[in-house]
Image 1 (cartoon, rainbow, N blue to C red):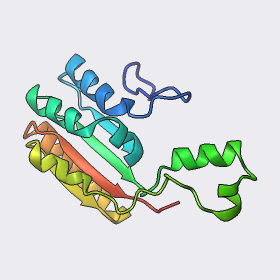
Image 2: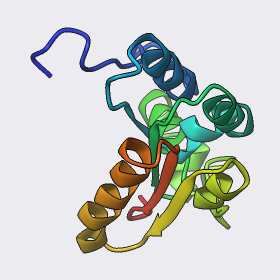
Image 3: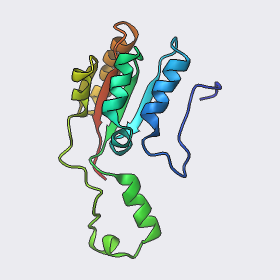
Image 4: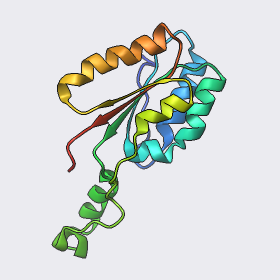
Length: 153
């Protein structure tokens, strides 16, 4: 994080869905670099994943997409809690349009786009899965998707 041009993030004021396209742009601008996009599943869905993975394959842009999947649009839930801490949703613990279950098998997007995909369900499996994803990207020149299940908030 101390090297210029090594870390990019969307503005805290917005940018949901920005990450997938930004990762592809970073790889296009610096093809010799390893690019890893880390996204929540809500941001991943807003990033038009079908289009992003199509472009990654069509333009030979092997990127690792790490999807942190907590089965919830937690950014929306957190914002609603912050704006309306005593509102109906907070009082009833019912947060409409934030539940993302059942969760799609995001890792399977890799199958249809010539990439490597893996579902990761245990913290102990993250590092080995990341190594496999990096192998696919660096050695096989294929994109990779890790669908990492996280605790539902």
